[in-house]
Amino acid sequence: MGNLSISEDDSGMILRATHAILRALSIVPKAKYCLSVAYCGLSVGHEAQLIDLLSPAPAAATVSLRDGSAAAALAGLTAWSVEDPVDVLEVRMTCRTAAHA
Image 1 (tube, helix red, strand yellow):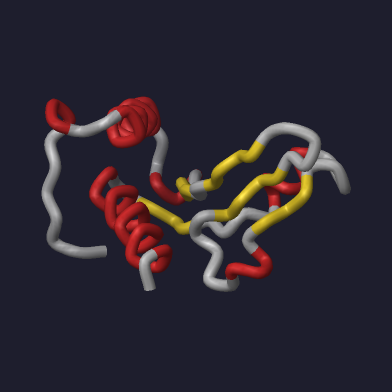
Image 2: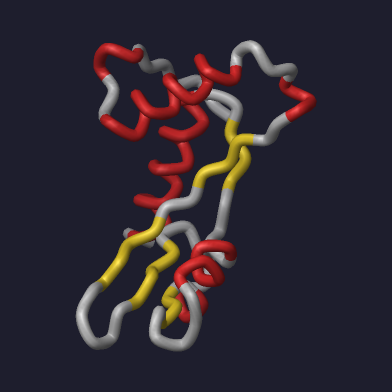
């Protein structure tokens, strides 16, 4: 995606988990899998909602968990294909940039 660089030692939980997943997948040919990421927020209580933090359309970003199952809401999240932890970091940065636009 870009030219950022990170090391496993100075990354947060999400990037450490990405490193671990990719280490486990290193024995699998890349043609056999596709890794993608989605970011969501969860509001709890009577009006529980799942919020798609990567959605380009704010109106479509919120799904009520009362109207259907959580599995259906998760399946509808915006997801980005990634190949390495740097891609994951760049997706997070894209999400933050879009939120402040």
